[in-house]
Image 1 (cartoon, rainbow, N blue to C red):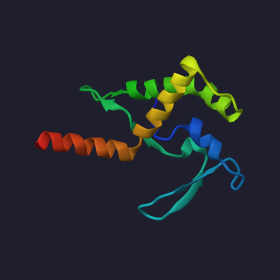
Image 2 (image 1 turned 30 degrees about the horizontal axis):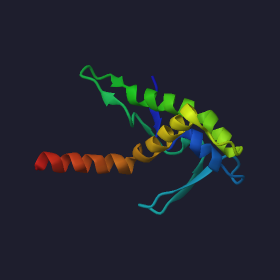
Image 3 (image 1 turned 180 degrees about the vertical axis):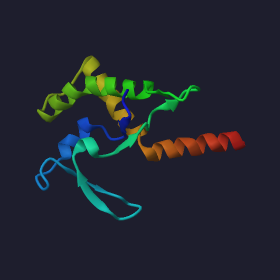
Length: 123
């Protein structure tokens, strides 16, 4: 069962890896002002970020599984775009879905959704 969930996909992060340190991306923490480098697999990741705890205490990873499926379909389209190929048909739709999910799957969007739901409950 997958526990480490990326809110910025490795598929995307790997294209920002630099030469110093080799193969790593730089992260800037706007809250603390800290900067750090890490490999894409260790960047923008949180344990069970998309998991939902079941009544028995186990974790349901359905959302992470879905995101992995979307990324798998988007990967060849992403590579094609980098080579100058414009997708059409279903591959274009698959990549559009990947981009839309990149926007809504972040901690900031999760907080915003929580605030909206909280306001609705108060109303």
